[in-house]
Structure formats: structure tokens, C-alpha cells
Length: 357
Image (tube, rainbow, N blue to C red; front, side, top):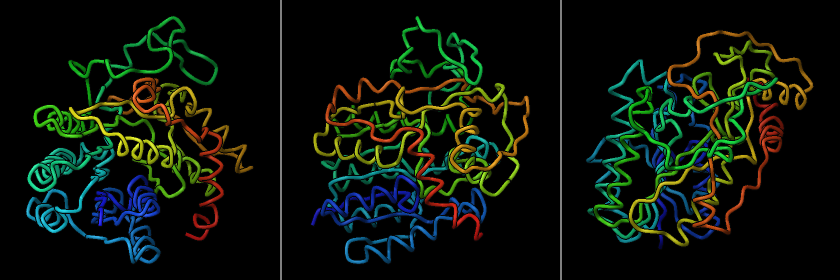
């Protein structure tokens, strides 16, 4: 019996990973204690998703209501499955840089200390396992905002002659810039994952993701940009654009494309603490204004929004991932979802559920 251990198993990426690896024939142990509800209220709960996984995959899926901050709990889990764990997918996090300001201790204990607990448990109990961490582009802080931008009608764009015209590479510095507390805690975790790979020669991977999206995300105001935006459109909830004239650009990657990247890594893992930028790249990206227009086109409803000049602290004006390094190492991986595909799926999968809430 080969076991895949997934933290944040009821979240967007975690639940997609659970289903994918079960379909590949693995047993999956999921860790999720629904802290998302504590972060974002009832609207952010993932209980509905964990209950679905337990019901549908009861023979192959074991769900554990454990806290990654609790070293004792984590060691107990790893000790029980130590002979069988072949892959650890770590998606559990406090995911909002706005929320982190409210409680920096909790933010850091989840993002940094929780990651350390998992890495140490792997070192003790299953050092040959593959460890994949969903990091974030926020580890670069506001460094991307120093790039030369050109203002267009509905978006900011990077100067066409700049070295990052095809997206931001992994060689961008993470030093001497403003990160936000969330960005700092995720960077601490990111570096730990790298260090366990390099110091112990483990198979660890930090994937610095852009906007993660998909139909099963519980989008809320502080996290889950695409889902929350479309939900606001469907339910006529006023949406507030925060700064940059609404022209700030994000690349968006579908959860299915992320999981296929995980699988490519697992099939051919590299040692030494690899780092990859992983997002929609030039294939799938959008500004806020463009997202509003696309949502209106898909839903057939007028969007209700207001504008505030106050941008989020450390927020990016423009961020598109350069995927070249990952694709060079894993040439069989290609993005399958466009931004239009993602918006269509979110709307068609959730419109009835949202309207019944």
C-alpha cells in the first residue's frame, strides 16, 4: 500500500490532489481541520468538501481532523504510515495577507511552524518521500512593482523589451523589499523546504504559485479572487477594486493543471530543493477590469463594483509567471485551461449552489 499524504485536503488544491491520486491507485490520507472557517467565517468553510471526499472515496481515503501546528499529532500520523508514505503534498496554509495582519502569531505558526513540523516528520519517518509545497508568488514581496510598466486601456503590461516580458523568473530577488506578514511567513516556509532538500539531499519542491483557481474553491473577499469575483456578479454583491485603477494583472492556473504538475514531479523527482514559479503564465492571465468584463459576458449580468485608491499593502501591480524552468525539467507538462475555460467552469459549476445560499 503506497500512501499519499495531503495537508489542506478539503481545500481547492488539496481535494483535487486527493481525487487525482486515488484515481492513480494510491491510498490517500488527508489532514484538514477546517481552519479556513476560522480565517474567513462560515462562508469559507470546507466541511462540505471533506464530507464529500469521505463519502465518495471511503475505501481509499482517510480523513484526519489534525492541526499541522501540533507536532505531536503530526508525528503520530507519520509514525503510523511511515512504511507507506511516498508523497507529501503540503497545501495547508493561512492564505490571506490581509488576514495575517490581524493575528501574525497564528499566521506564522500555520505557514512556517506547520511546514517545519511536516519536514521534520518526513526526515524522521519517511526521508525518501517526495515533498511538494504550494508556496506563493508573494515570496517576492513587492519587488515585481519595481519593473517598468506600460499603462494600457484595461491593464498594466511590462515593457516589451524587458528580460521578464515572458514572465517573472525564479532569479528575482526576495530581499530588501516589502512582503506583507503573509508573504514573510510563506517565504520562511519556502526557504525551509529548500533547505531540507539541499542540506539533507531530500526530494523537496517549492512551487511559487500565481492565482490558484477552480470550481471547488470557497472564494471569499480575502482569498479566492476569481471565484469570489464571479460569485459577486451572480449574486449582485458589491465588489471593491483596491487600487492600481483595476488594471493590476494576475496569472491564473486551474487546480487540475497544478495537480498534473505534482504528478510530473512525483514520477521524476529531483533532489536538492527545487524551486519553480507555477501559474497561468502568458497562457492564462487577466486584469481586474478584464475579469469583470469576462464575468459579465459569461453570466449575462451587469457587474456591481466600486473603486478604492487604497491598494493592498505589498500587492502586485503585475505578476505573470515564467514557466520555462519547470517546463524544461518536465517537458510533458503543458497548461490545458485558459482563463476563459476557468471562468466558464466556475460559473457553470456554482451558480445554482450560490443562488440557493
